[in-house]
Image 1 (cartoon, rainbow, N blue to C red):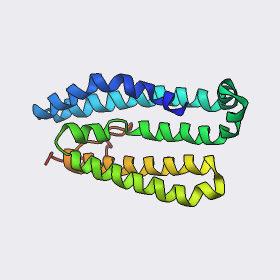
Image 2: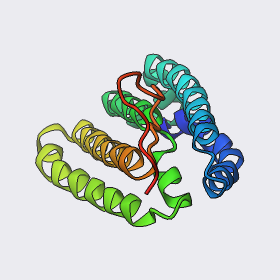
Image 3: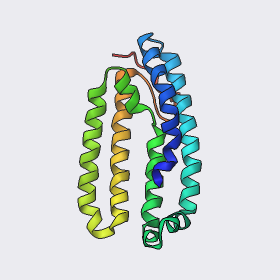
Image 4: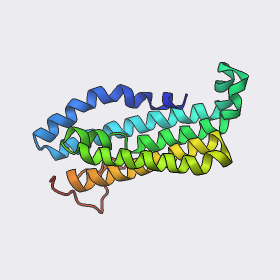
Length: 174
């Protein structure tokens, strides 16, 4: 259910993907920065609205699929937060992959998986479904942080919803 909150990401990705690759090939860093920032902001805004609505109606949404699912309300709300966190830097991994830095994106994903599994092993016995959701959130945070750092250092781009930070001049792509 929480994946519905990132439906905007799924819809925008096919449109932004060729644009990222094309602008990178043209070395048009300013347009690449602008387009990725605008796409990220649009996805983030839509994801926040969707996640907030789902989090507020979590009990009712889960009751639709059966009363046995309603104990998962807290986990669903945590997953809604995780989806919003994911949308904060919606296109950082994609930007790396489409510009020849897929190894960086892969390493971030692998470390994210390790963090999720490790946190899951610690939190699931204590918190059950909410522990699993929290572990997922932790992995997403790690992946976003690593991919955002990589796009900043390798591409000179801030791919977060904040776009270009005034105090950070763009770096030349490697």
